Amino acid sequence: MAEQWNRKRSILAELAAGDFVSGELLAEKLGVSRTAVANHVSALEDYGVDIFSVKGKGYKLSNPISLVDETVLKGAISQRCFYFDEIESTNGFILKHAEDLDSGDICVAEYQSAGRGRRGRTWVSPYGCHLYFSMYWQFPQGMAQAMGLSLVVACSIVKVLEQLNVDEVGVKWPNDIYLAGKKLAGVLIEMSGQTDNECNLVIGIGLNMAMSEQHGKSIDQAWSDLTSLKSMPSKTVLLSLLQKQLQQDLSLFQESGLTPFQSRWEDADLFIGQQIKLLIGTDEVYGICRGIDQQGAVLLETDDGVKSFIGGEISLRKAD
Image 1 (cartoon, rainbow, N blue to C red):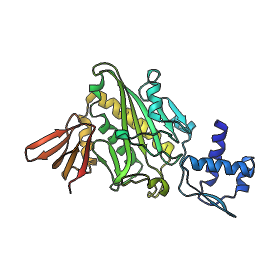
Image 2: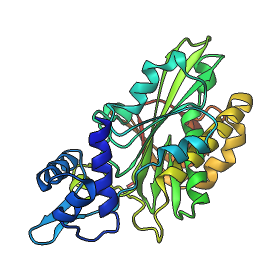
Image 3: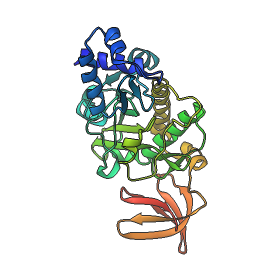
Image 4: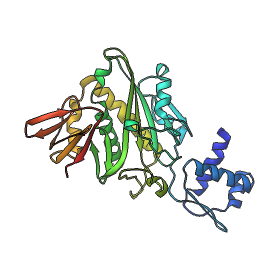
């Protein structure tokens, strides 16, 4: 399996310049037959890589592919990194091995066959196109200590993107990251343990780097990616910065709670001060968004005063 992926990665490296490359030249460079090259290209397409094939010209990527440099990434962070070309789910890997991990250990993959989003949604995970990342963390005081954690993670992502000169980044409660008004990244936090005892958490992040037209059509909401930037960030650099920022922010959160992050959240909040509506099951609540409280609940100024709302089924939308 490793050798098969090495050849596929070699093909992608040859196509990285964005020009057509003939099957004959690829076969020569890889030391395989042209049929083998065609089979590898077909397999990459099955994994979601959009590759043009034109008779007489060869192969060309329709979108840039950014692959992780495993050696550089592992050398850049202090905690363990588990890296895969393909996996069912990075969150699933962390949950399965939680008892053997330390806070800050991460799992990274180029492709997820069963990537998950919030509320049971599928997270589209084509090979090499986006960032799929999960981090393990343990809270000694139990699940209650993790209240508001998803907002901290969103603040960490925003800070890293700003360090990489990504403009127009904002957050939508409770943990979606937007670029130029469209969804760029999402967070899925899963946990196991007791309310008042040791609690194991996995923090999953999916971030769109280069969405193909084909996969964009399968997403049921407005999305964005990083292809509009003058210079696409290295996925390896992005991951190393994200791991370090999360470790720093989660340590602060574990010690001091959500208070140190409230101003960071409000600076990035796309809805603060705006008339919005909350969808709670079949109910709708209208009011002016007033930020968050110390537990991470969204504050809404209604006719009955400022009220806090929290819960997994709440959706946040601008009022009509």
